[in-house]
Image (cartoon, rainbow, N blue to C red; front, side, top):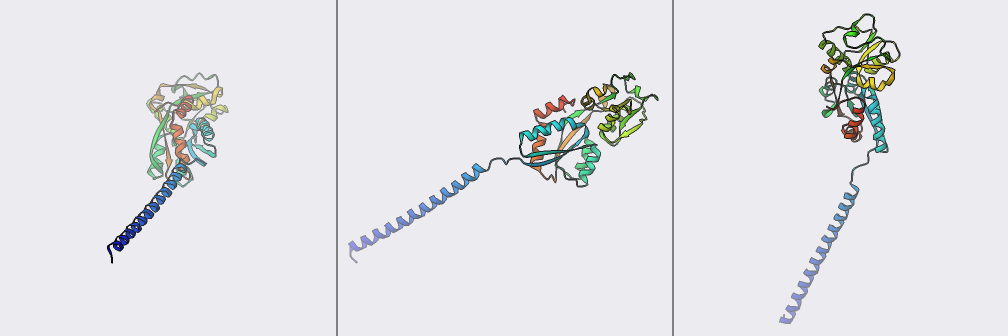
Length: 275
């Protein structure tokens, strides 16, 4: 083969290799652009998911007014969501949760009743105290019996009701009575604080030991009387997302609202205090 022919063959081989390399580079570039485009599309579509669906909140009866307001605020802030409340005595709510009742959030009126849920392994994470509450005596409007202290409730001429000892308001009342070295036999023990208060509202009882938040919520239907022993029976209110929450995302968002500055404002206006 002549020198000229060898040179021509070498040039053709080099040109072919260069073309192959260029083709491979082009393919890689095209593939990279494709991946980048897909990643970009994924990134642009991957913002926070819109909250939707129902969230079931089990909450202590004393939270009825403030949580109802926060529930409405939450639904307005997140169209497509629905907050469904189950208000009641914290002990019965805890029993329902540990028995498998479908719930996303539990807000209890005491750490003791929350412990029932955490001990059963039904809480997701560690419950957080979001407010505190203290007791007050609810009397008939105008306080016709002139109740001025916890000791005044021990007289035989007054019909007094207490929350059941198993619920937080009842346990707190017993603690206050112990601090005052008093014994009180009520005409009835009620299943939750709203039931106890309602006895006075309906004039079926002369007085009840309830939370000051409930006295405030009742307006002019009752009159509140503060007593110093209430300082020995302040209840912490913990809240938690539940482990098997059917709608954990919305449950988490509702807890965030409760613990936010806006939530704190609603709760303190109702008579609760910051932890």
